[in-house]
Image (tube, rainbow, N blue to C red; front, side, top):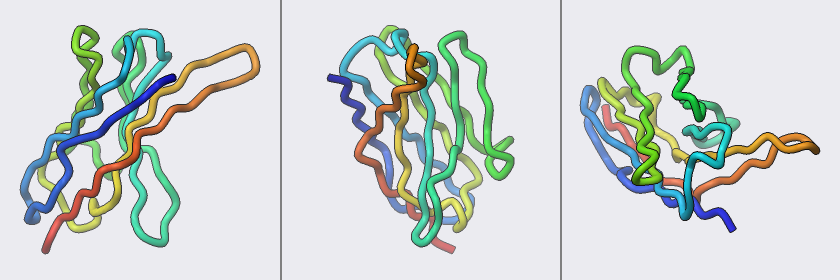
Length: 119
């Protein structure tokens, strides 16, 4: 069973930085990709950043130039470096991993970590 555990959330002031880390229970190369989503109160969960098995990345427009996603296949971790944080970045951040299978796509989620940016 796949288990994803996030860490690194917390409270930071506007303009500050945080680094989130997601540790997988097994090898992350078995996933087609991994990423970070976030969900703010009253809003839908949205993709923040994603990195594929081959290392290709994509970001939400709102975080481009401020956030960087990276992966370490040896440690089975995916990190999200967040800089120049804004109050609108406040949300619960979720680690995601997915596999493309014959029937479609299997998604796996962590429990989430709270990020709060104070103004």
